[in-house]
Structure formats: C-alpha cells, structure tokens
Amino acid sequence: MVMPNGFGTLLIGGLVSAILYGITTLQTYMYYMHDTEDAVIIKLLVAVVWIFDTLHASFTCHILYYYLITNYGNLASLEYVVWSFPASSLMNAVVVLAVQCFFARQIHNLCRPQVKWWVTAPILLFASVQFGFGLGTQIQEIVNPNPSVITQMRYYGVTPGVAVNVLAEVMITASLCILLYEQGSSSAFPRTKRLLNTLIVYAVNRCLLTLPLIIAELVTVVLARDTWFLGLSFVLGKLYANSFLASLNSREHLRHKDTGTLSGVRISTVQFANPAKLSAGVEHSNIGGMHFA
Image (cartoon, rainbow, N blue to C red; front, top):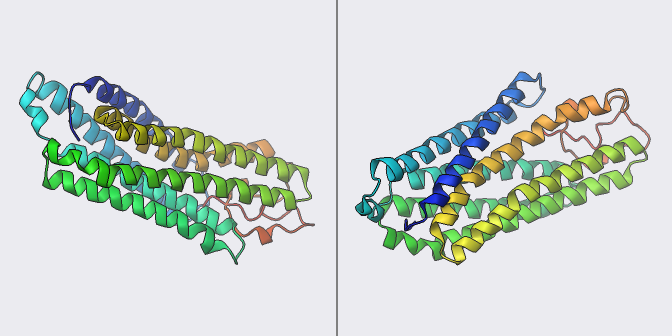
C-alpha cells in the first residue's frame, strides 16, 4: 500500500491492536484454564488463532519501528513496502478464515439435514474467496514491493476481498440468528427460550463488533485512504480472534447463570447441532445439541 503522510493512523491502529492482542492472550489463557470437553480440533484451532495473532502483533511492531524509528524522516523509505506489511496482512487473513470456518461449522450443525450445505456452502465460498483475494494481494506485495504497483491492487484485490468479507459476515450473523430463533420457537421450555435468546444477542453483538470495521475498511479503500485502511486492518484480525474466543469462554458464564435451572443441559460443552435433537418433551436434551465445540 502507498505510505503517504498519515502515519498517525498507523500508530493509533498499532496501539489499539496491541491492547486487543493483550485481551486475546488473556482469553486464550482463560480458555485453556477451564476444564472444557471440547474436541481436540477446537483446542488446536484456539492455539492456531493465538499463534497467528501473535505473529500479526509482532509484524505490526516491526512495521511501526521500521517507518517511525529506523527510517524516521527518511522519505526514501516510503518508496519501499517493508516485508512485514504483507506478512501481517496474511496473518490477518488466516485468522479471519479460521474464525469464519468455525462459525460456518456451527451453522452447519444447527441446520436441518436437507438445507445444511445450502446454507453453509455460500459462507464457506465467501470465506475462501476473501482469503484468496487476500493471499493474492499479499503475494503481489512481496513480489512487487513498489507502492505505485501495489496501489493498483486496491481495485483488483483489496476492494473485492473486503466486499466479499462483508457478505460472509452478514450471512453468518443472519444464519445464526434465524436458526437459534427457530430452535427457541420450537422449544416448550421458557428457560431454554431465554438461553437461546441470549445466544442470539451474542451473535448480533459479534456482528456489531466486526461488521462496522469491515465496512469502514471498504469505504477507506474506495476513497483511497491507504493509511486509514491499514490502521483499521491492524485491528480487524484482533476483533475476529476475540469474538471467536469470547464465544467459547462465554459458555462458562452461561453455565453458572443457568446452573440448577436447566437440568441436564451441558452449557459447558455447548455445541450447535441438529435442531431435531431438541425433543419437545425432554428438557434433558442439549438445547438442540448446542455445543460450540
């Protein structure tokens, strides 16, 4: 990306990113401290998200140090895009893909068998496409670290990638809300309905956390405000990582909140599964098998 004058936005984005990375690390620690019954793949996914988020934080520090310390006042440095820029963006792309695939899996488990792939396939497609655009853009930045060449990628790689990401987020949130609402409507138990309504609120809050920033990214790309876009991109991956970890760690709060009120409901192992598992007359079922693992 072109690096004109607005290093202030990069610095602010880097500082906010560092704060969010601290929260990510805390949430990761809290997750592993809890005695969860999650599948091994979920535990590995948490580790992968944290590792890539850590790499992103490291590359962000290198970017700021390179331009603001090592090359302070050196205008010639603006003619070269340091390697940590595409590297950090690639780490973000991996985190976003991992988190979106995680939520696509939950949606797949929630859906009725007849529509599972009709709902999840578009989400996975959009997630893969946005990752492909991101990967292609970063490779181009590495091969041609010239700002004048990279600026062209704004129209061919960044803009469509961010636009597709908006579609993926809208589909994930809408699908979660609709499916959870359907399960709540089919339940005869008030406490189950309240719990499902709480999960709907969590899904909406997740959307409100990530979607406005993605839209802001899209606007700044279209308006050619490169440093604004880059400052926002420093933060985006951290929001995805935190929304993912919060969805896992919130189960502990729900478990304590409903202990003794939902007999047999295992909130600690909440996994979205087939709504058919929600038996109309048995409160011992897993709230539609909901299990975030």
